[in-house]
Image (tube, rainbow, N blue to C red):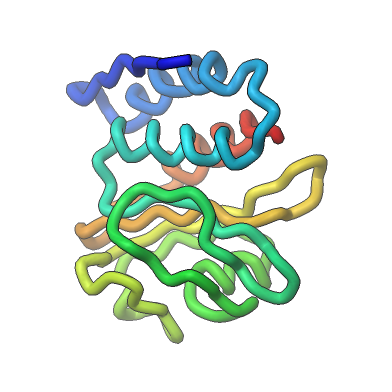
Length: 158
């Protein structure tokens, strides 16, 4: 089934999230396939915010493995505790990095990435991966992103 999002860009960041969330609820309603839901969330976020890169890494054994994403090609596997994604997994917490060049052990999958936010992703209270978002601008992400992206992650099921 084809879905169209109503993308509103002339709003504050918070208002953009508030506009997108009900649309995502509708988009995800009734779909039980996790990969389909992750793919649509990544696409919707990329379309709404025009971020450099947005996608999911899924926990498989002792690594994060690349899942659905939007943007340039990415690192395929990340060890626990490595880079921002592996650190968010290890710490089980959201990490906001204003300048990726200042993050110890940052993995430079794309040199154009300047700032990043990574959030743990759960299904049935079990951490199953992370949402990784990169911007080509310094200090792009803040607590508004953390709050609303957490809310969006809670909508995903599969």
